[in-house]
Amino acid sequence: MRSLTWHWSKAVEIKSAVFITSLPRYTSFTGMGLPQIAVAGRSNVGKSSLINSLCKQRNLAKTSSAPGKTRLINVFLINNAFHLIDLPGYGYAQVSKKEKESWGTMMDEYFSYSEHLKHVLHLVDIRHEPSADDRQMNAYLYGHGFPFSVVATKADKLSRAQRGAMLPKLARVLAVQPWEIIPYSAQNNEGRVQLLTRMEEALNQPDDLLL
Ligand SMILES: Nc1nc2c(ncn2[C@@H]2O[C@H](COP(=O)(O)OP(=O)(O)O)[C@@H](O)[C@H]2O)c(=O)[nH]1
Ligand SMILES: [Mg+2]
Image (cartoon, rainbow, N blue to C red):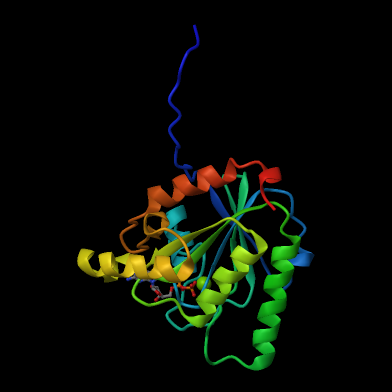
C-alpha cells in the first residue's frame, strides 16, 4: 500500500545571517554559486528594515530615514546556504542623470550575472499607488521572466480597511493577484512567516525551471 504524506510548506528558519560584502559592481563578486534571493524597490521603501526584521537583527543592513543612501549591492549569507541581496534603491528624485545611468548598469549587470537567482522580492509601499519606477521594475521582472513576489511594506501604517482598499490597486498595477501580495511590517514583523515560507518555496525550485 502506498503511504500518503501531506507536504506542508515550511518557513525557512533563519539560524544565521552575516553581512558578506558591499559591491559597486556585481561582476567583481567572488562568492557566486549559492542560490540567491534579491530585494528590490524604491529608496526608502524599507528594504534594509525588512532584511533586519527577517533576520531578527537590528543593524545587519543599515537603514536610513534619508532616502538614497544605498548605492551598493549588499550581500548577506543566510544559514550558510543562500545569499540575500539588498539591491540599490531607485526613484530618488535628487540623483543626477549620471547616477541614474550607473544605477541602471549595476542592475543590468546584477540580473545578467546572477545565475542562481531564485526569486526577487519587489517591495512597494502599501500606502501609495506604485510609481512609474515601480511599474518599470515590475515590467523588467516580467519581461525577463524572473520569478518575483510583491511585498507591501510599512503595513503597520494602514488600518485593515485602508489596506483592503490598497491591495487590489497594487495588484492591478503590478499584474499580480491581491492575495499573492505579502503585507509586511518591519515594525511588528507582520508577514514574516508568510515571506519566509515563500522564500523556502522559491529556494526549493530547481534552477532549470527558471528562464
Ligand atoms: N512604520 C514603519 N516604518 C518602516 C518600515 N520599514 C521601514 N520603515 C522606515 O522607513 C525608512 C526607510 O527604511 P530603510 O529600510 O532604510 O529603506 P531602504 O532605503 O529601502 O533600505 C526608515 O526610517 C525605516 O524606519 C515598516 O515596516 N514600518
Ligand atoms: Mg537600504
